Image 1 (cartoon, rainbow, N blue to C red):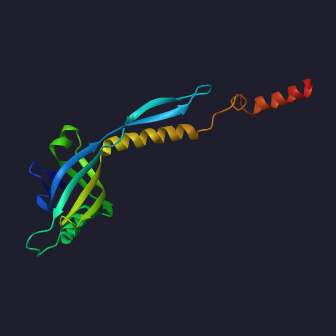
Image 2 (image 1 turned 90 degrees about the horizontal axis):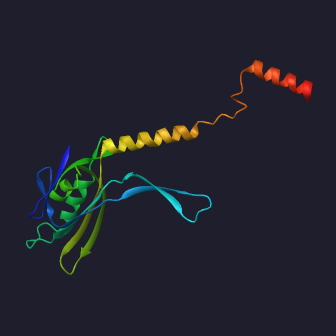
Image 3 (image 1 turned 90 degrees about the vertical axis):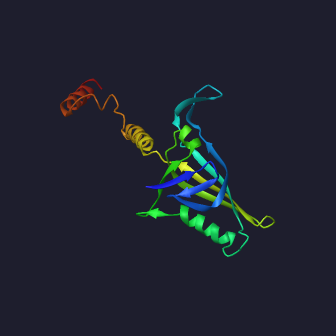
Length: 182
């Protein structure tokens, strides 16, 4: 499993190799999942707690133009971009995350979700926002199982009273009584 480490000194490392950028800020966003349903005769909706959504993590970093200009900031950007767009067996790479902030929020694994880039030519720098989403296969498995159970229950047709009335002999007797009594 690939590893991402966010150091206190602003160094972002992938599998132990420092990436050519300086981390300015790390942010996380978590939220609850609420299901709501309309209540007849009411102006509002009934809200039901349905768990916690995956954490979103954002790393704001800067790539500076080196003074010697042997390698441009755009070459460094290419390196960062390629580092996070890796695939394993045709699927996005799951990264183990090492960060004090992530650890305190119990975020262990993440998937690369996006990269926002702003070129600041006045400063000879490229601003990055590297975005990840939490990857928790156990939580995802439980949530998928809950959804599948609910879908199976919803797709099972409800029996009517007449359908539960009995077998073919019962139906025959009912028809005979209907013929007798109209």
